[in-house]
View 1 (cartoon, rainbow, N blue to C red):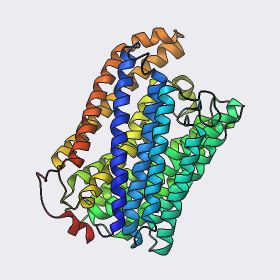
View 2: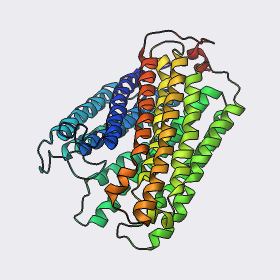
View 3: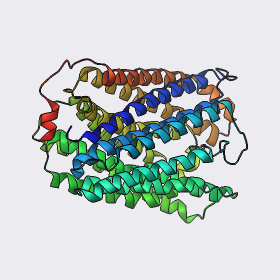
View 4: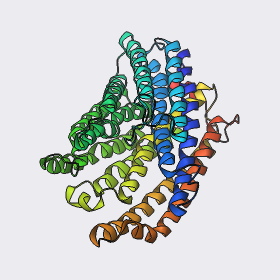
Length: 456
């Protein structure tokens, strides 16, 4: 570790991993509720569990992004973070907001209150005071990071990261726009949800993956940066108008069916480019880096993102197909693998790379870390396949044959049992990863010091 303020990332990564454990545990509980519909009905209703599951996912991924920025930007900018105090204040705001959200959702506090009560918009259910806190924390973060970059060296990694992080923060402002017209409401809602995960988050992904490839493979910076600019351009070109695939059936003009179909089909390209980028960098690389776990997560991220976000997204993105599949378990299959591949695996990759250096060690517990990769990835792939088959059956029985929703759900029971089994594997893999990162044990495989290699 070259800069003292990189230690800020440690607090962010530890908080993120704690929320990661909460998120996957809630997902497992929800998986069993699909099997036994009366499970925890009185204590933890399904809608509350789902809100906690999705919101904890978003918050821990954001904390991972922030931690990654605080770790890599000092190295890229060749200077310390502008204000460590502001960074810790930002983290405190996020933690307080998260606790407020959990208590509000779980106990349904202040129901109907404009400022303190939860809202009814999926993923954006946070009370307005929490949303305001998120905006304040984002402004603190952007000021801190921007001042660091402006006073230091500018690279493609810092430029693309800043573009993605600024876009992420600005688009969140649409969370405050809640018109009474449902079509307009959903239109603005997708400005946050879609343009985050298929726009600005892709830029953050490109920045973090570029940094990892630079450190892990030893490829010349010039080559990495050329790839990154191409990937960023492709992501924005396809992702912005690709929002149209959410506009098919919400009351917007019919031309969105063609715009959405064409541009969302092109969204496969940046994810393929990221996968090609990662493997070409490793192939060209001259460095036998000792942190094999970080390299495995980086390559796994690129591959699973391509299949989850790219291939499974394309499966039901054309409006003629989406007419039948929209809102079925096919959507859930795509969502789970896309989020896991593109963003969960990305955060786990940067955590695997950074944590040994933040704690002043050689890469440690790599065997356990890599085992957690295969356990989580295998579980998520099996979950994706079972949900895809469930969604195919559901589409035919419900949307084509016209059978009742609950009658169809009864016939999907066996798929939900298999999905729960895959969820168990994911949770075990997540707990194994956290243990491998946090446990104070030295490495089984110890080819050489990571700190000296990374500093080259």
